[in-house]
Image 1 (cartoon, rainbow, N blue to C red):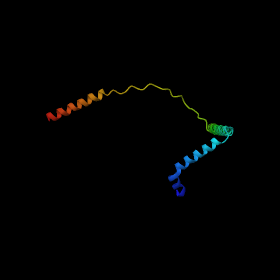
Image 2 (image 1 turned 90 degrees about the horizontal axis):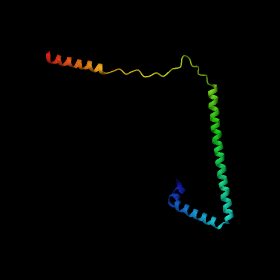
Image 3 (image 1 turned 45 degrees about the vertical axis):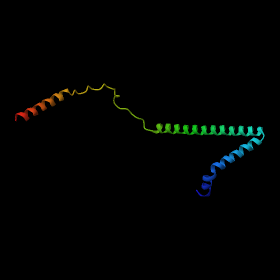
Length: 117
């Protein structure tokens, strides 16, 4: 950071506080009318900048809209063929009871085969 980095690390906060205090004292010594005129001018400039920024954002937004519209216009039309799909109800689920019965029978046969063989 060099000299300025070290200077700011050591004296930065104190230096800024002293400088701000000096500026406020200087403002208090100035005629009140001049201060008010300067504040009004600053506020006017700030509002002007905000308006310009808003106009620029609106212009960019409109350009983006126009670009997207041109892309849609240049794109090939989507031709739909055949009938339109219609939503149908879900088919009933397969009952699992039958498989459970088959599994129980297999278990019984295995048990019988184990004990009687």
